[in-house]
Length: 168
Image (cartoon, rainbow, N blue to C red; front, side):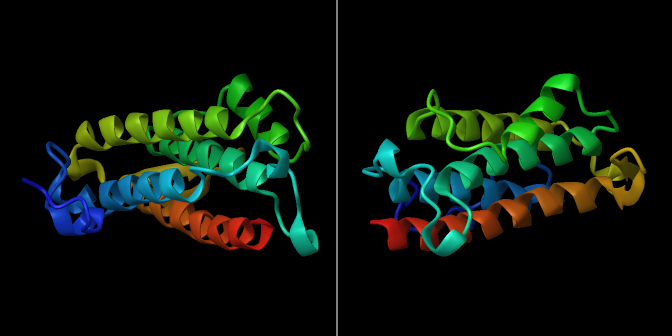
């Protein structure tokens, strides 16, 4: 039996995720758990608040899902869709009355699920393959994008933790 009090990386490998991608899976699953605990009792009324002018919880939650979706799309050597571009532009719009904490957490959880499936289906032999990012095809690699998705997620989780603590 796995001890749920341990951080995700301490619980052992994520089943079927290639060894070199385990840290990416661990970080994403850890982010999901931390967000769930952090926002358990967070009120929707504070979703768009910007204490001291910093980014709102709503922005961070939208951005977490959006960036993860976008960088994993680039890792598959695919271009962003019109829907993804629309979501990118919506991240800066606040407040959005029809969006709740639960909506945003569900979207993030679904995005983590999709990312874990993609990690499981990623051939380790492709990790150093070139991947162009954005319209300018800025240079990256499969592993560069996957790792960036994980580290970027954790960076925003940290920022969101501070914002929520200030607001509560």
